[in-house]
Image (cartoon, rainbow, N blue to C red; front, side):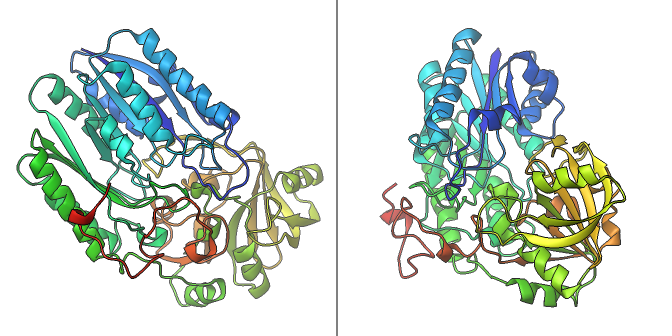
Length: 498
């Protein structure tokens, strides 16, 4: 058996003005052929899981193409065409394949190609034909589209948010493909698309109400004849017709059962819709709450969520902590200009800095501080454990760590960096246990990294392109009606038009 592996992952925030270009993929992940095996076979990522799940099966693994970019703006048309051409080229050069394992994100949006994932999955399907089994993983933050579902035999989303189970889901997909190729099972999938959105602050799978929803999916997975079932939480920052939550169920050649169970999960989600809407806490209220909690307290800056594509230089929480002298506290800001100034001054120097707030006008103004340069670094660090995103090697560019007399420690980076690893601090001599407050620019993803040192957390409703207050965003392309935007709507699987 010859089994191909393809991956294209990027989470698109359509509210960001700047486009995602090919350079964003090349600086993160852009691999062809055997380089995929060399760099990712051992990774805590679904691609690593593909290799692990196929190991010892006596098949030929054919790595084709893998690309990933950090979350950012809409993917440019030229970049989309280049990526699609790479996928087609890799398929042409691979020769006949008996099966395929695919890793889309599910929330990739192009300027013209609005459903990027549906487009490239259908491209693969057209290339290999209807009889070659194709099994896909997906990020549950994806906005599952009917075209995605129609293009593959089964989709398996990660079960955890933060996403720490990507490798196991890749292994699961590989095992399902092997069973299919051996003739043991015939995957048949149905999807349910209730017209609703799950608020980003309610999407942590270990917290209620999402935990109850995940338990319902687990119950379906244990049903006789079911091969898999998945929850799609949705990504509210991709303004597309496909935006929203979804459920999928994969059975062993039983389309009636797949439809029945998928619709049942869709109804359960719909019944919980009020509990799955936002619960918002402002900056000052969040700091008041944090003062009563056991520290270090993790303050999740939802409006400047780097994992959702945001600027990484929002200052609103840093300014409030600095003004209230609520430290000792830590915040990381993307600010190449200030890094250069700190580096020119040198370790131990004191200087006036104007930090953050330079990318746009949405995440707070620049913050003026008098700071001492504590240390300077090249910005490379490594995360050996399974953490959100499955990444191991990180490079945030030249980095400066500075402190202010208000007790605020600021890590300044030359590249936007997702807060997915505690090694972002510890590898550069920063002790997270020494702080009363730690600001992480995310909603759920940072929890996997910071939970070991932060007994408490508060999600903070800050403005920006990833704000949890979706009334502050203007949508042009989403489905209508959709809950909670249009709250007085009725839905049932029987009334569904998708």
